[in-house]
Length: 497
Image 1 (spheres, rainbow, N blue to C red):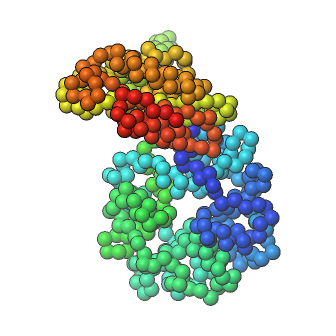
Image 2: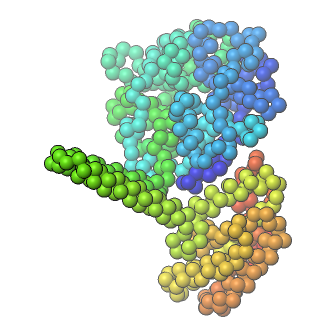
């Protein structure tokens, strides 16, 4: 399950969310939420998802002074669950869109048997989704939430819970007393703080905000970059930051969801957007011409002729856009130097084959190799001949393809990778030996190689039977280790496991 930006949704799934059975007591569940710092608990029986209960539900029930004793989680859980089948997700932006449309922060992921796989939250996405460069150039004040619910240090904690429930927010900022119209934040109380308190003390109506709030407060300034906010959340292991101005006055709140809104969806998507914008501009231009011609020409036949001509132009533009999109897709999937598949397409294809072969319980093998002493080669012969060397090796790889499902890709620099579906270790080793011999047969001079007079390669081979509950990175790690072993054993050889 890979997005077009090379992002693996599998990496964003928490495969071990907090789970309980429907007969679990509510007090026990609240204690678990407090101890694990989880933002929700999933109610599961025989791998079937029955309901969900979140921090916000704890705050809502607390605000209503509901008694938690003698209640089971089945009595209070939300049964109308928004979930998604893993096979239906084509990219991470589908997930983000679902979470925005339904205004949720927890999205359970199910398999084809409607059994629970795991859960995706803004926090899990942010941990693995590489932020775009715009995070480094855009400022916190551009995306912060300016509507902030506030209270004073002496405010009763039950009133704090009421504020959260009434305004449907996950936190309340505590400000200094007697500051007039200005707000100077000194602490923050979150849903998790309420959950912890509820787990420890049954009656906390006498507790004041100052005894619970996070203190000292660790705010971020509104003129800091979003990248700074991202790093601070990672360092402090928190989900939101209070934003202040240069004088320390409250400006707003920045959350994980705010950061996710600005992640770059796809490098090539920007180009497609420009093409679409060009088409729109041409369409508007044609429409303006039509209006002018309709005013000047009264005869119906001439107007029909013009409209017919414009219709043809519309179709031509649409066809041009279709061709341009196809070309962009091809460019997005290919390595510009070698013509092999690029890293992005390899990751996408790897995920698809991993899912397919996990259902079929068939073997999948990888060969990873790179050119021995390639830096010495570039230093000796120059980068132009270095590029030509890689192109020659790519040509050998293309000729080695025997089956349509096999994929050869440039993994990075002088490193290549071969994906072999329905192939066991023995078959992969056979192909690796063939590649090794074919590269030698090119007889590309390499006077500064420490092992041969010509260009050689070191290869790592690994094979497995994929499983849905394991990441593709597990096999990548093994084959990379084998490549390292081949290098450590003298290079110009094959290591396998």
